[in-house]
Length: 79
Image 1 (cartoon, rainbow, N blue to C red):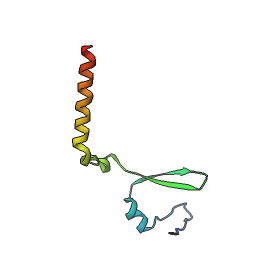
Image 2: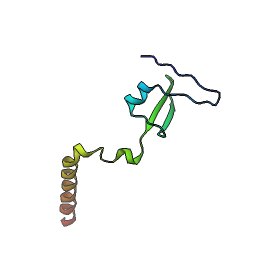
Image 3: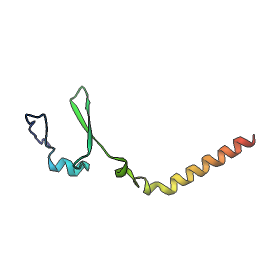
Image 4: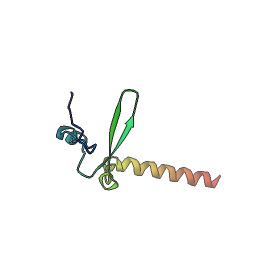
């Protein structure tokens, strides 16, 4: 898909609405530009607030991993 945007005299570009929706880009969000051999990548950078709860679906697995690590540390401490 090829979407076009125009660069203004103030070096600003309007991101097409379709791209903003698809990648969750909102007003005020920061983006990072990365140069590659193929061109320029624009990577949306979510805020810490946006990341809150992102791992909720893995909570039980994460808790189990922490318990395993704690048990391993206790075993190593006894040795």
